[in-house]
Every structure is written in C-alpha cells, then in structure tokens.
Length: 178
Image 1: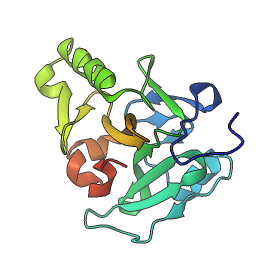
Image 2: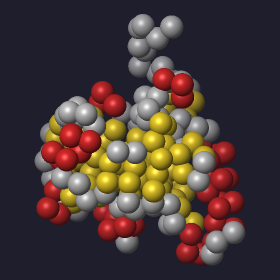
Image 3: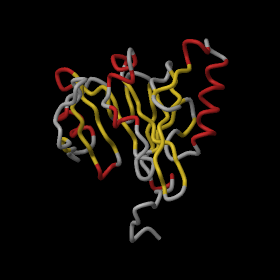
C-alpha cells in the first residue's frame, strides 16, 4: 500500500508512532531540556542532524530527524526547547485526548478556541505569525503544512522557557507553512 512513498503522501494514524503530550514536560519519550545525545538515545539511537546554519539569531540550534518526521530546536546549553512534528509522517501526538498532527487546521483551531473559552481566553489563546493559533496551557502552536492541494496541521510543541516569547524563541522558519 505504501511501498512507494510520494512527496505528498500522508502516513495514516495506524502507521504512526503514538505519543502523548505532557505540557512543558514531555512529548512521547522526549523531555524538554534534553541534550541532543539524550534525544538520540530516547529515539532508540536514531540520530538527528544539524541544519546548514548551526545557530540562528535567537540562539537556537535546529536539528532534523527526517526519518521520524521531527525537527528539534535547542536553546542555551543545547537544551531541547521546541519540537515540530511533520504533518505527513511524524508521530501522532495527543493532548487531552485530541490528535494534533495531520488534521484539518480549522477544526483544530476551533478545538483550541473551545479550550480557551473554559479557561481564561485572554491568557490561554494566542496567535503566532499569520494566524497560527496557540494554547498557552498546552505549549502548542498549530502550524500548517502542505499535502498536495490540502493543508494539514504541523504542531510546534514548546518548553516553558520558549512559551515566554514563542515567536522569538524559535527561528522564523519554525512558523512558516511547509
């Protein structure tokens, strides 16, 4: 069925790793604050490689694990401060029982807005860049990624440190449509 992988193919949930989000603490086997070698060990030895520019202006080092559909952002002291999950093939991440990866953006945005209404909407809901909703209590920004002619959700999961100023804690390309 998926012997030949096309550039726009979306891995079904049944074939994805299933991870839970514990806001500001863990995403699946990963813990915010880990160093790169600890992330590699937690992923079963699957290495992630630095991008061409080792450090951006906000002091973040970006590393990619294409095989698992993950991009890692490391802050001061090479500590994990953010994770972007690829909409096409990344693990399915659940927050409060809701799947965050590879979903229809408007439906997930409505879920984030609905969560904010039962909390303090002025503190819970925020937007990064051109209309990407975020949940302050979950430490999540719902970005998007192309899948052919469709857009799907590509969540960016943040550490408590990065939540103080999400837009400036990660490089600008973390928030762009892929």
